[in-house]
Length: 360
Image 1 (cartoon, rainbow, N blue to C red):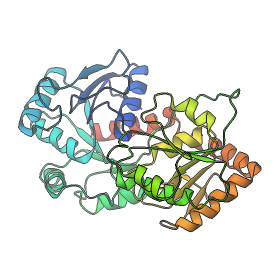
Image 2 (image 1 turned 120 degrees about the vertical axis):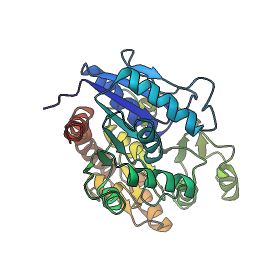
Image 3 (image 1 turned 90 degrees about the horizontal axis):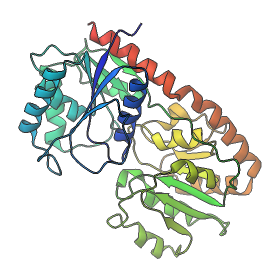
């Protein structure tokens, strides 16, 4: 039984991004349950997501616009937490959570952190060591991993007594637009200048498909410094690959496309994949670390390709393009399976674990 009346969420920002989306979605759901939510944004940057009006929102003024001022941030967070006295702190991201831990030393406010990165992601060494050393010296009350493999990695460096829960991100039910006709398009979503997203691999895959009537559509920022336009031009795909930039209405976009592709090299948790499944889209993904194998049952509710197998991905994509009945069946099963990641169910898992950790 949840007895938490107030929760402080610490997030990098509320700009466009997977971590930011997850933290905002959870905060909004908690607020809808009449839990007092204090939301601390580490950076003062462009707002993309919207917080419930009942949430107390704090962001730095005059610092942390681009460069992180650690000592000033520690003092700032400590003052906010002392004044508001939340029952527990939930930090998104190991590094930012470790800053919060240092900020609240001696305040007796329990802290749980949610690790958001792929186990294979390489942070700059000073950031990596800062987070791990802080939690070695001052252990958190609990840790949340998004996948089982991420939890296994966390066990290797966290003190043995720290409880770890596997809680995936929630996915909101996508608004279905049944009146819209799905076009001959393949959709990919994410930061275009992030090498780990693997969009260069997807463009190469797309160059191998046989049906030239289909187009590849990207939604996400960062095109100018991504190098993707050069790849499109080198492969002679001008006019067949479209870059939309930031898209607010993802629901409508997903209603207009026919296939969702996720070619990542690594992810903390593939939020966009779950959202596509919740939209009833047939999804195809490389088997990267971490996430797809936790979510997709191969050839049942999606397709998983051996990581890096460009030709195999293209063959599977050709098969989906040429078989509408297969696309429909995979999309229907994807929609069914996405329901276990519903906001209500996942929020309950968060609350159960936070309640457990608050009493440790």
